[in-house]
Length: 392
Ligand SMILES: Cc1cc2nc3c(=O)[nH]c(=O)nc-3n(C[C@H](O)[C@H](O)[C@H](O)COP(=O)(O)OP(=O)(O)OC[C@H]3O[C@@H](n4cnc5c(N)ncnc54)[C@H](O)[C@@H]3O)c2cc1C
Image 1: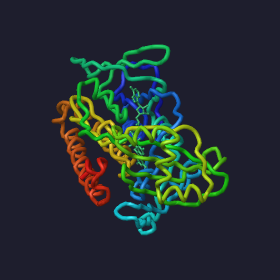
Image 2 (image 1 turned 120 degrees about the vertical axis):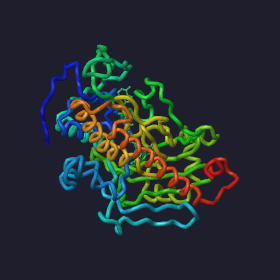
Image 3 (image 1 turned 90 degrees about the horizontal axis):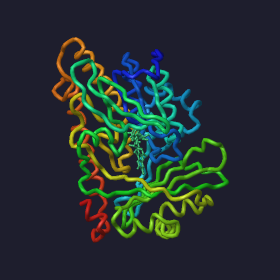
Image 4 (image 1 turned 45 degrees about the vertical axis):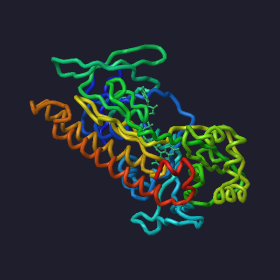
């Protein structure tokens, strides 16, 4: 792995990446390994929780690509946990089992998100990227006539500084702050899906290695046994998805209402009761709607991960898509920058490589939309309920 260190105080970079989640870290690792001078900027100095913990078997190779051999990664990452499959009560009341045993790897992964994201960031630094934590992207301005295309304004708790860069990457998640600053609209197609998450703990063991999914009249639940990085209690996450404008959403945001809704679950509640789980901490909410940028890229900038397109958690594809498109974007930006230095044209969407990336983002969105529609249509019950009517 490349390990050139660049001066953190430098004001000029090849690529500035805004947001150091999986997409930002993967893009930074790829570009830094290819020899680009990368500044990776993350507004949060520390994070208390983050949703999104299961990876399907098809993502194992990607995780190994970015974090190294899984045996070693498991050793370094107490938050990595092998999973056996999904059990979903979806199309009927009968549980349907998808067993990972019959896949190429034979297992999927549950990850402790904070440890996983941190490990990716550490690998970005090890690859040679410069990481600024607690630093926020404020604005950007086009500059012309020299090597650099952008002047970017970043601020921390103590100072605001201007940086110049040849290329700008938006990896800021669903907020897509760079695209927003450039006036690119987010298209959410009126999807108001919202997630309400409650963590549970119990004193005994819970060896259940299946993700549990359950459709209900007002939305759907999932639950995952979580790895505990502190080595104390056994932890489980239970999440309800419903539309934010439905009355049930107001209920789900409060403990009493959440408990009432959960009581009606026939699949997840018995599991919690059997193990003696009790709620731990407050209910957290997060947007879970499908959305995409109207433009995935433009002149000397592009978006990666949730910033470009964010998926319904039903897909379990968000992290995979962030890592995969981070690798793709990193390569395409590198080739475009190299070509440009050799007099091979601009860095806009007409550039062959950037065009390729854009085309792939369109394909991904199309495939995702089709899959999502099919999956919701498979669930025939509660045809009088707004949540399901909106999805048919
Ligand atoms: C309820 C729920 C369950 C999910 N479950 C799964 C799952 O099981 N499996 C799965 O694969 N995916 C899941 N996901 C999705 C997954 O978490 C996301 O797709 C993934 O985190 C996207 O990574 P990202 O790097 O694009 O964005 P993020 O992880 O959101 O990272 C963006 C980063 O940008 C930073 N940032 C934002 N604004 C600025 C700024 N102005 N300046 C500097 N930095 C900034 C943020 O602090 C953040 O660290 C789930 C999502 C939800 C809501």
